[in-house]
Length: 117
Figure 1 (cartoon, rainbow, N blue to C red):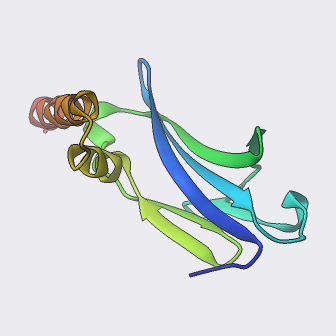
Figure 2: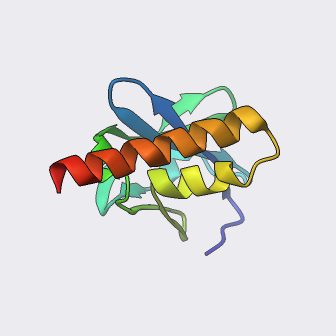
């Protein structure tokens, strides 16, 4: 989908003891952020402002669940995305460090999948 008032700008991972998947949006029209309803996996969430962008996130994604796809919806725009989606996009990067992180995350997920079954 598309919206004249809000645009999906990027997605990032925070790699701590558990993984956080964060999706960023930018206002592109005259509407206030309060005029939008943000849904993550069907549940309403409040976006957090960071600079001129806003984000919603899923915290505490365990290694064995990195293959799960999540649905992010706002203003008629839906993104189906997960940790491995991000890993796949980084694996295509020209930056060697990003490729190495992507491959390490994939190997970590595969090991967790094998361990937990």
